[in-house]
Amino acid sequence: MKKNSIFIELTPLLDVILILLFLILVQSAGRVDAFYEETRQAFETQLDTFKAEHHHEMEYLRRVGADYSALRLGLEEDTGIVLVSIVSDSNDIDNRWILIEADSYVTQVDLCWNAVARDNSALELNTALAYKIQNAANSVMVIVFRYDSSSIFMSDHRLVANAIHIQRQFNQLVVAELDTNNQTGGMS
Image (cartoon, rainbow, N blue to C red):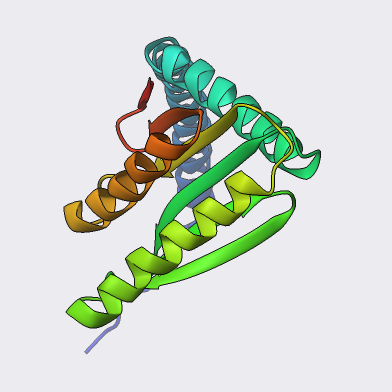
C-alpha cells in the first residue's frame, strides 16, 4: 500500500479565521457601546421621572426633618415643647415604649399587655407629663405626639391620647399629632 502524502497549508486558513474573529469582535464592541448608551439614556430618563414623581414627598420629608430638628433644638433650649413618641422594636413588636422628651431629659415608659402593668404605665405617663408641664416656666406648652401608625397598636395610641387629654383639662396645651407613616399631622 502506498500512502499519499497530502500537504495542506494551514497558514492562509488560520489568517482567514483570525480576520473573521477580529471582525466579529469589532462588531460586538460596537453593539456593546450602543447598548451601553441606550441603557444609560433609559436610566437617566427613569431617574428624572422618579425624581419628578417623588419631588413632593422629598420636600415633605425635608420639611419634617427641619421641623423635627427645630423641635429637638427647642427641647434643648427649654422653649416649652414636650415631645411624646411611641417607639417599638422592629424585631419584636411586643417590645415597645413611650418616650417623653423635654428640657434635654428623656423619660421612658415601658408598655406591655399585662393589665396591671398597663395601668401602671398610664399612671407613670400621666405623672411624667404633669411633672414636665408643671416644672416648665412657660405659660403655654406645646406637646408633639409623634408615632408611626404602621408599627404601633391602637391601644397604645389611645393610652397616650388619653394622657394628653387629661393634661389638657388642667393646663394650657397646644397639641400637635404627627403620624410619620401617613405624612399627616394635626394640631389642636
